[in-house]
Length: 352
Image 1 (cartoon, rainbow, N blue to C red):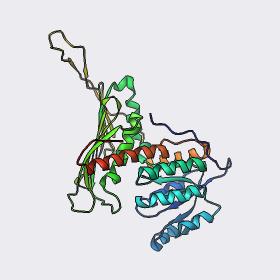
Image 2: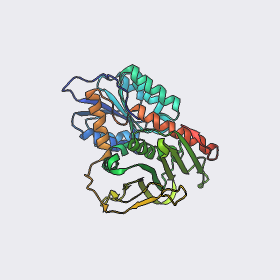
Image 3: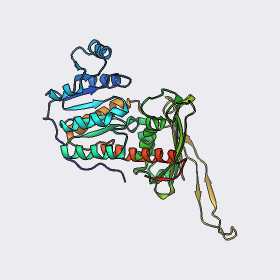
Image 4: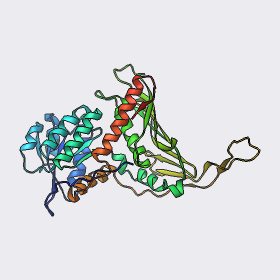
């Protein structure tokens, strides 16, 4: 089972706003700045970025927010309770470590580090510093994924057979990680959240169809307990943008399509289960096919990034562990490392 570790975090004084710094104002940083600037009980005090042009844009949009170009300048300020890190993946580990060593709470974009050892060390550092470490898995705060979790209750969903995820698009091509480390963390996180566990093994094949230095497509299979498998297809080379997760059980099938605003989640009340063996079947099991309705449940509109940032703030204020904790992020990186090792071994099964 996946669960947060009970840690008593150091919390700000009751009634005072939680003061946050944003590190990185590139591709994803502006979205964080907008959300943090509007979030109740939060004060975005400073934005840090190495680009003069990007900082000029910050000053134009947020005139009351300070700016700086050096991360070290943040640690000398007394108006930074925590930091939100939205920089390239290869820089995460060093910045997270520096923040925790200076006793700041941290929300970092996935992955928090590119190695299992690095993630484990950061989790231990956060625990010793009594500071919150949270990883930005926004799909855990997506209303569609939350609806899937609701409809996968055992009495309704039955036995879990398998999960399948497709995450493809024509780019954007990253220069510090491959397509697996860029795209698959989302789906591994969704699988682990829906199943409330982490995989036991991984098998994967990748390719460099764009002739770059990194794998730009991959097909990965994760094995969970009770013979449940999860399959993931990621690609930077597909002209079709797809963001879909499927869960298949003995009583129903669920489809989450993040690009379909009209029907974000579809529930198929259909399934195939195994019945009792018949006397004249030579020990073969009887397959029972169940047909039923197709339902499109209402999914309340909400912004996943806002929900994620709200939990970060609430977790700091209450001193509790969030869903996307550092330990949860460590489990995802363990799976990623196993997938990478399997790709290097041409699909050989690797224990997670």
